[in-house]
Image (cartoon, rainbow, N blue to C red):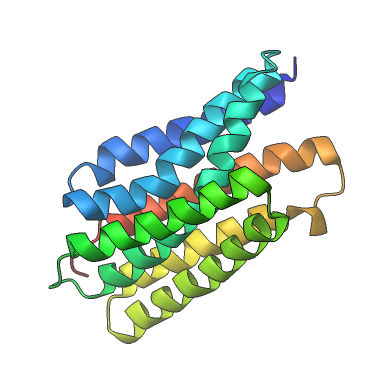
Length: 197
């Protein structure tokens, strides 16, 4: 049993649940689904990860499943949700939302079936760049709070992804990842909640 990892995973999961109930439930259906595709899959992965660290080995498979879901479907959905958020007068079109989710699930299914390691390493990086670009676009459009939360969300996600560059201990690295990702999830929730600035 690894107590620090259990705690950090539970914190990450709880932050995701908090974000869902506090910020995402109030949004239009497809906008909610897109934000949820990332945030709730991260939360479920975290809770399953905590169970694995508590000694329930089979929970590790559930955690990996939802981690892969978050970096494929979730990452694509996050990009689209972020860009649509910039234009506060536009409502996310159900057709666009459905297409994005369908593409994400197709990539996820292919990865689950034949395993393409490049998918889970490249898509999140591209998504971070595109969400950061959305944050910059929001700042340029005068939507400073939205832009700030999107950029901070990406910053924390990037720090979590590349934590090995500044955390040498593998055990500490796991906890740092969880806490940084929790900060990222909270920032994205705050971005999702923005209507006008």
